[in-house]
Structures are given as C-alpha cells and as structure tokens.
Length: 435
Image 1 (spheres, one colour):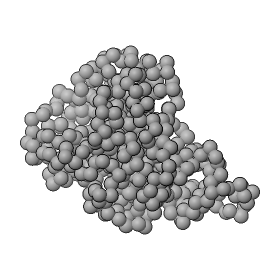
Image 2 (image 1 turned 30 degrees about the vertical axis):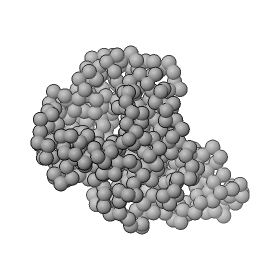
Image 3 (image 1 turned 120 degrees about the horizontal axis):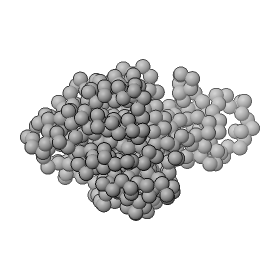
Image 4 (image 1 turned 135 degrees about the horizontal axis):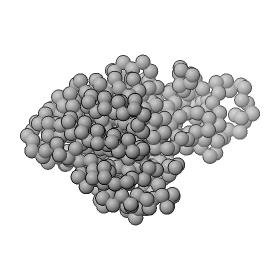
C-alpha cells in the first residue's frame, strides 16, 4: 500500500491536513487525520510520499482535447499531449475525433485506439464523430469494449448538422455539440483584424445552433454544449435546464481569460472557434461558473505547429493549446476573479466532467475512488516559457504569464507518475465508460 501523508484536502467545507491510504488496486481505502489511530494500517504501507502540507487535488478530467493522433502528429501526438496533460494536473482526457481519417465509424475508432494505446501517460477516452449515416453509432452498442466517450457534432458542418437534427439518434450517448450555425458563418474577413474575424463567426451563429440542439434535447437526447462563448448562449442553456432538459455545458480557459481585444494584440495565437468575444461575455461566463450555471471547464487543447500559428488570421488554423497550465490557470482565475472557494473550480474540472462522461469512480479524493491525486504547491512562483513546454505547440497565449502555484507531483490510479517535471512511469490506458 501507499501512504500520502501531510496533504491538505478539501474536507467538510475546509482544507484540512490528512493522510491518504491507497491500496494495491490504486483505490483510496482511507482518509484520516491522526496517524496514531491507524497504526495497524500504516504497518502495511510499503511506500510513503510526504506531501509537505501542499494541496492534494483530484486529477483533472479534461473532457475536450485534441491530441491530433492519428494524422496530424507534427502538431501533437499522444505522447507529447499526455505529458503536457500530466504537467497541468490532468489524469483523464477525452480526445476528439477530427483526425485523419475522421473517426466516424467503429473500424476507424478501433484503428485509432490500436495506434495510440501504448503511448499515453494519462488515462484516455475517445469520441466518435457523427456521420451522415447515424446507424453506424449502433455498432458501438454491440461492441461494449469500445464505447466512445460521446458523439461529437460540428454543427457548422452541414452534413453533420442534418444528421443530428433529422435522424433518430441512439439515446445511450451524450452528444457534444460545437454550436455554430453554418448559414451565419462567413470566410470573408480582414486577415489582420481579430474583430473582423470575430464578426465572421457571429454570436448569433452560436445562439441559433444552441436553439437547434436544444430541440433535439427535447426528444430525450443527452446534449452537451461545448465551449460556450456568449451571454445569450448561457441564458438559452439555463432556460433549457430549468425546463428539465438533459443538457450540460462547458467553457474553455481561453474564453475565461481573454477577449477579442486581446486578439487584436496576439492575432492568430488567439484564433479559435468560436472566437473570443466581449468583456461582458467573459464576465458573464465567470459569473455563470460561480452560480453553477456552467457545468465544466475544459481546455479544448488544440495544438498547432509554430509555423502554422505564425501566419495571419486568414491562413492560420484555429485552436489554442492550454493543457499544460490547467491547474495553475485555475488557481490564477480563483485569485483574480474573486471566487469564494477554490473548490468551485476544482469540481468543474474533476467531479462534474467525470459525471457527464459516466465514470463515477474518478474525480474525487474519497474512499472507494481511484487515487488520481495532484500535489499542488500554491507557493511556487514561476513563468511560462515556450522552451519549457512539453507540448509541440510552442506559440501559446500563456507565454510569459506569471503564475503562483504549480503541479509538483501526480498520482494516476495510485502510482506516482510525475514528479518535479520528470515523468516516472507511462501507464495511461483506454478508459471505457459505463452504460
């Protein structure tokens, strides 16, 4: 057994120093404060890790990443992406299907899994993309060893939107919706103006797509609206929740930190779909997190090679890489946005995404849960530098940002896998969701 001692854990509404006992199956068997009362259990411990009164946080479940493999390994691969994930305190990722080839069938899904299964430093789930033949989704229900995390729908792709809206969908899946209506999107904008780019994918495109997705939710389908960017979108989702619809939502780190004014400075480095919006929208997203109106925070980690992001707004691909800085960014947001309790943000990246992805034994530091534990030193001061990044994406908006608080160690299912910027063991595995 493993003992993590002198760790500060959120317990009964406050941060308390506790000891965490982990069995050989990687699950937490006991949390206790006094070592004197548990001498028999401690006598069976063969490894001790001293957390030195640093925070012990649940491993992050990032339900929206793009590790690019297969097809775009020059941007990122599962090894580099999962290393970056560990450095940010992430222990489980759900990887998106816009690969080459697109992952929109059982065969493509299995081929991807076989290609990456021995490369990851974190546990992972995989999405499947909706195709115009939605009967392909039923094949997954016949092969339950290969269940996807969910079904991704890019509503700005006309065929995908039509398949999602017009066909009878299997109700066993959660449908993760990129909500932008293709009819309102234009490719005609000023290549040197972020405001012009933002106007080409207007806020009305998000709102209309959300309304369409919610009509599908009214049929009893589980719908998750990803990377919400506007106040109007938030209000529409909140209204649907109050109606009792099966709808959840998330917001990205970059929409919580930046606006289109920052985009005018950083240009293509901040190009993303949907675009960054107004300061009013950013504040509304933060307020929604405080009021529990948004379920999760994601990275939408979308890495690109530096030579791609170093182009103008017309030619550069959309996407921002963030996963390496996940917990430090959350701690920074906690401070600058005046959250009452850091645990509000912690739950939005651990417990809540685990629930949406139907993995009930991850996302908490509690007895019976897997010991996905991040040791976070909130006193360390440091600066993000591209030469230190584990991701292949070196042009990121976080460059030169100063942080207070850093991930020092990570346990994955009870094994110490990362410590002081060194990767100790690669034992990430495909994590099948429960029906």
